Length: 322
Length: 247
Image (cartoon, rainbow over all chains, first blue to last red):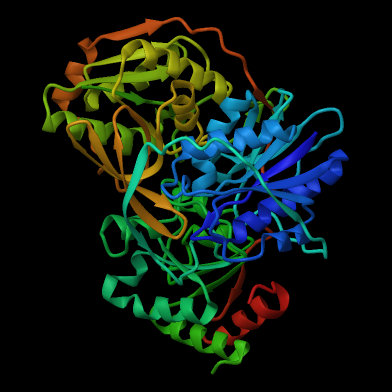
């Protein structure tokens, strides 16, 4: 009996989402009176895996080899399920990031385990197993009862605070039969160096109020000052003013940053559905009737072209970079 | 070549979200039902594009749901597709729905199975992966572009911090999102044709429910917006720094 946490590697690095999953899994194990163990697939890791013990995991199983380079969910799922079975894991925890979304459902089928995808809190484990998740694009939540003996949880990114103690994890090799990947990566296009939108703690997002793609400079300046990721509304992505991977909303990316700054976005219900999990929402819009103000924590009714440069300067002052 | 597109039914994006029966059921009264946008705009339209490029392709739509789903299935058929299959079961759990889809897919011998990346009601996004595992097929999640040459598919998918292009041999399961295709509006000819297209009803296979919703709830209402004058942007930054502590 134990909790197994899948440690996702992005270019050999353990990113924020994996640290969140590790903290979550370790806390769940403590709550269930059992131990937490991690599993990492691949040999090339740019940091000391033992350090991850700080989140409360006792042991990390590392499966080496080149078989994971293509990111084939079928290969990953087979090996993670093998490790789960060999270690007697009752619960397997994933981050609900792009890898988790592909692998967790397959692992759940292999283990005949009930899956909660998009969990936002630790389960209630007294007698039942109830996991809270967002539904209706964040407009409501559900407590999902998992009825199977084994469980799989995929934790939403930016939903759980990372905690560090001073533990060290023992890294042990795990020998698994790694099937041949059925997919082949032939190219990639990464926004290296930039914070990914779903992991970003601050997001600056702009809409039609910017009047055209040529005006994005002042949005980018604010994002740079805030160390924020850029996002946009659907009309902006549809008009090809910005790339579609920046589109947040019900049919785009759903995000939950600490701070969401919406500039020139009216706040249609479909947009709110993608951002309503943000902890603090700031709205800047010249229309005082914009529905977004109802969902905002702070707002400025004013011309974005005047407000944004002032905002950027004030942020730089507070951050001591001006 | 046979393509199967999985279609789910969801409340309209502007529907009021409320619950009944002691907060255990979604309040359906007065709700407009639509095809889940990811299934319609991206999965179905991409499949239509493939069929338009190669008339020999057979395109089936699959839905798991009761008779009350039929208007939504006809709406999907109005966009295109040769026939629809409805598995006569009320969907309550991802695993059991995936088991129904896998059973139909296995019998039908499909080369390509498309789903949307998630439904906008339960936001699970797990059906494609589960179906792929049940059928022992490769799965490309979160696809933003899809091209076919013979039996080789070239797919762009979202990964952490960007996109990558992968090659895979059919058969394959793909979950579709923005970028795959542009949303379409059905025309009158399509709507007329949809009325007479075959809609086959099949009975469900035995499948267990692994999960159930014990309780729904609504998040607490916001306290209300604090407005700051546009002439005093420093005050906004001060509030974000000292009060909200997010800068």
